[in-house]
Image 1 (tube, one colour):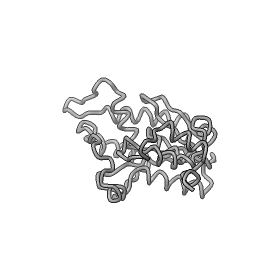
Image 2 (cartoon, one colour):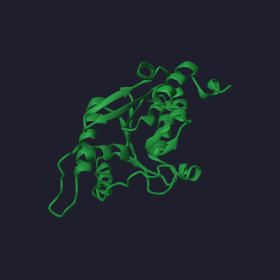
Image 3 (cartoon, helix red, strand yellow):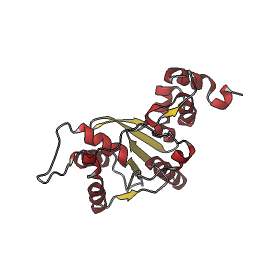
Length: 218
């Protein structure tokens, strides 16, 4: 029996990237778009072939506000809504995944990120190697301790894997310090401000030097 390995996929992130990666619209005779489904499944088949997981989970966001919106009203303010052409594909994509025997999970009040982080924690406790597949670098805080984060750079086949060693090579610190880095820099894509006057480069240098915000502001 093969050694257990779980692949955890950020459904919304990958299907969004897949939708835009297929340059030519794919539309059925009755006007149903399939760009996202086709691109997502192309990614899925590559992931399954490259990593041969014994378990898979696809986590999705829901439309309902999350605890982050309650904590900060401007969270993700100004972000474009999912285009209708892609929104119509989501229920069908989930049906396809279920038909393939692949578990999906979503929960009101939480994001796919929360589901992925919880699943990684459960896998670590069980001693099962985990791979997180996403297009969002926020997930790099999970890299290490038996978890590899694989970032989709572009298209449906360009992926880069991050473990603790790669994190240190690229950022100069481990995944445990990545949260402090993001806290200093902020997250423009989610409309989360960082510390005034501190950009990405400065934030990276400060965390490389001090290791944490607590050490920076004793």
